[in-house]
Amino acid sequence: MTTAAIVTTVVMSLVFIGGLWFCFSQMGKGGKWED
Amino acid sequence: MAEVTRERWGSRYFFLFAAMGSAIGLGNVWRFPYLTYEYGGGAFLIAWIIGLIIMGIPWMMMEFGMGRYFQRGAPGVFEGIGKKWEWLGWWPGWVAFLIVTYYTVVIAWSLRYAVSAASVAWGTGEAGATGAGSYFFGTILNLSSGPSALGGLQWPIVGALAFVWVALFFIMFKGAGVIGKVAVWTVTIPWALLVVLLIRGVTLPGAVDGLNYYLAPDFSQLSNVDLWFGAFSQIAFTLSLGMAGMFAYGSFIAKKADVTNNAFITSFSNCATSFFAGFAVFSIVGFIMQALSVPVEGVSASGLGLAFVTYPVAISMMPAMAALTGIIFFICLFFLGIDSAFFLTYGGVISPLMDKFGWSRAKVTAVVCVIAFAVGLIFTTGGGLYWLDIVDRTVSFYGLLITGALACIVVGWVYGAGKLREHINGTSDFRVGAWFDWLIKIVVPAGLLFVVIRGGFMNDIPDAYGGYQIGALNGSHIIWIILAVTLGFSFWLQAAKTKTLKGGE
Image 1 (cartoon, rainbow over the protein chains, first blue to last red):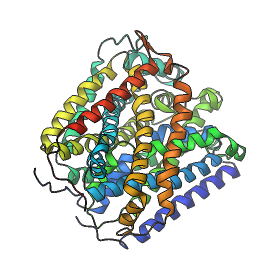
Image 2 (image 1 turned 90 degrees about the vertical axis):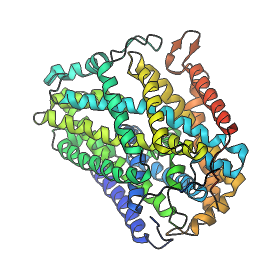
Image 3 (image 1 turned 45 degrees about the vertical axis):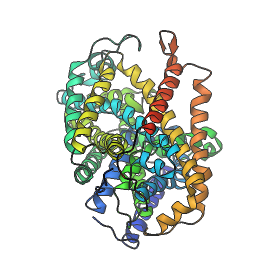
């Protein structure tokens, strides 16, 4: 793969992994989930 | 009037999987990767992420939040805002109903192909590569000359379609509790299969060339309006919003539970899946480029062409594990589609009908499944592909975008975006600021209307859509008629008496 394609892959992976990590780290800080 | 005890998901993870399953569908595989390649790889991804943040996530928060507040599906939500707005909940319900009538036919094709792939029925080697197109359009569809020439039903597809609807009935007739548990499997199985397909794809010769086309950024495209149109349209279509179902899914959340974080997780997971699927798709595109010595422009990398012609071509040319790869690919498509199908049917149609008329779930589910199957038969005829194209353009483009924009305007300006924000912030894992109000009131509807005007009206008003002619009517006329009729039916449903109590606080 070209360097540009690799950089795109790494950046997007960081965006998604970082975003989801933040979201899951916040789980349970709001209202109580009632089943 | 009877008080309704609202059904619940049973677990937050069941809800998340159900919402992710509804969003993650066939478009993640056959639309997103192609758009990324078409509009400058990494440059497109920038616009796509911006679209996700300023349009997709706020829109999803709105649908989840309003559903949770009123504890009702879309029509109940808009009835709660004001009786005169109830039609705005039914119209996207019609959109969902019509989408699922042809979406299930595409799922049926996938099942049919999973069987065909076991013997690579379209042929192997060069013969298969040249015969894949005629196998799909001839053997499978028996495609006629146009929408006026329906021809006969294609019975293998009818059988597969019946199987799909029976499966959907058994998934849906016990409600959200079972839907959530099924969604855990219908989301994780295609994820696992995409990993297998990715590994198979990147180990094929030429795969790297395809990935470079997929990802290489061309930042000069950022000044191209078409790039922004493509990015915003993809966000509008990929999250399964504007189809009524997310209101209902949100209504199955208890009033003290999170909205914002669930919307972020659902949206990010959906988009991450799209990005990942692009590797599986474009590694195959690169393989075909090398195997057949054709340029990237010569490989159909989107839509039905990708799924039912290009991928079979690749299977024909594979040096090993061709049949197995084909079976895995088409089973993956089946699972990608099935959870979107029960989302559309249950969230968009069945739950609102139960809310409105107080009918039993099993009865409504059975009736809706039978009617949707019957309507879907038109798409299993020789002229079915043309009708699928027209109806898809009508509901999945115009219907979704117009009803989505109107819903945001009514919620933002009539109900009050600030009121919705306070309600959401009251229980969510993290809070959103006043910027949310302006996104719902202005940015989201403007973005949706931008797509519908630029991609729709500017093309279909001066020129007949698809060049179709059915008697005295052309393709565009059919589109306007279907939109008008579904709008009329929405007002008719609004006029009917509501037999269950309103939700809300």
